[in-house]
Length: 108
Image (cartoon, rainbow, N blue to C red; front, side, top):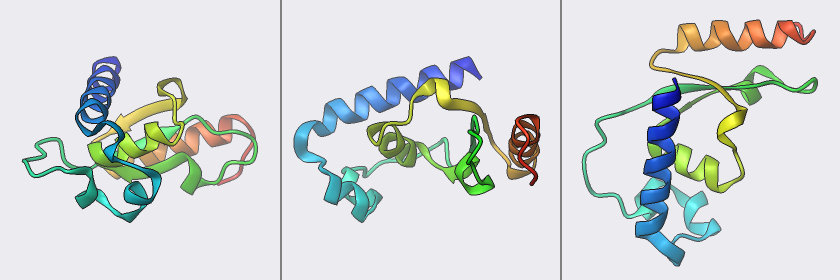
């Protein structure tokens, strides 16, 4: 998992470096086409599990993303240390999210 987080961080830095100040909040909210990406995404979709807080819902802790969604998440303030895991399929991601939530007393 550490390698995946390092790769995401590197891609995040590279994409942000390429885009520079051309990407603003309104562009980011309007969709991926405004990221200036016109190539091939070989990574595809994955599922991200975030460490829960006492007020978290399953939707807060588990979400589907691609690398460009993650760029926006990092720009929005998500820190790598908040990520509990990144999974290729939903089933193990959901199981981990539920396990983490139950561990802090949240009934899912």
